[in-house]
Length: 369
Image 1 (cartoon, one colour):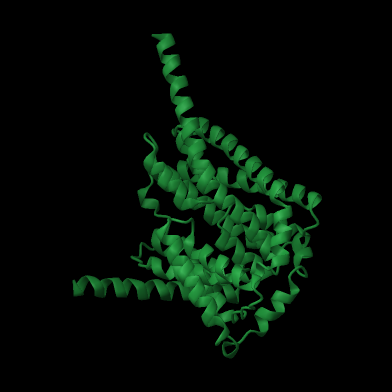
Image 2 (image 1 turned 180 degrees about the horizontal axis):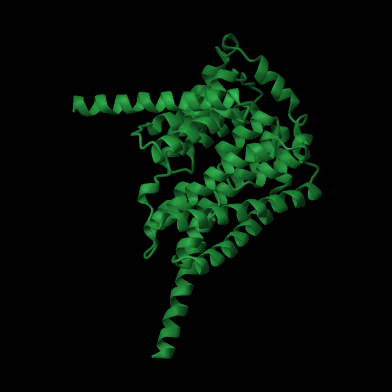
């Protein structure tokens, strides 16, 4: 047992060193969001190219998500929540359009690959990685490896490409949207955290624990976000976090994402990966088009609109929005809405669609018999 624990510790230290080297290198190269992308890419290369044995406890990822959740909660002021409520019809319509577009992509991929439509559909649903994989496990006839690989590759593509896209000149219009938050983040210090942070920490931990018990989606992210928003609604202002803590949270999450893709588990690697990349690019293109539409409907910046509709995780998009000083409350609101929609509305809809397809196939087979 002790020998097994010592091996885990060695693998963890190796993982941490790899992540820090990746983050430092990306920082030196002035690549956007270096402490998220650097550890992710370093872990991906180390696992699949250098064949290193890594270990990254889930608890560290969860701690990183709690830090990001707290940062998101700080942006959820009463004014921001009211503005989000006014956009609920747009959130719903954009989410539905994006999911319909995904179903179309899945149909094309199913025709180009050996996978059936059910598998490619679950692989194409944006966001809600854990929920989609759980749904795939519960559904008969689904190729779980293909769903997992497609989802992870799509997530990695979004995390890598979004920071690069939002640094283009066309997206620089969002720099001043959240300038006050930017100033507070930069000037935040360790001495200013206490004792104000203690109340927020206790409330965040309690809500995370409760959310985990009732199987609330992404409770480690939403618990602190909701708790912080509630305290702010009562006029209690939370201290902003020092940049070092923000960077640490990025490393915690980025390293976890980088270790998710295990190419050794894939059959017909090149074809599967190629189709996953192709579908990810199509999904990104659809998000770009919808973001342009969103800027015409509401007075938001191009960067905020793109991050709001990006088919990535709320934690990663929140990190990027925070770094470029986009409207973090709006980005989080749209991502949160899609997360809830995927967690609660998509599973029963997908199961209904699959049942209808099975009945249709059975009727066709009886007709030919």
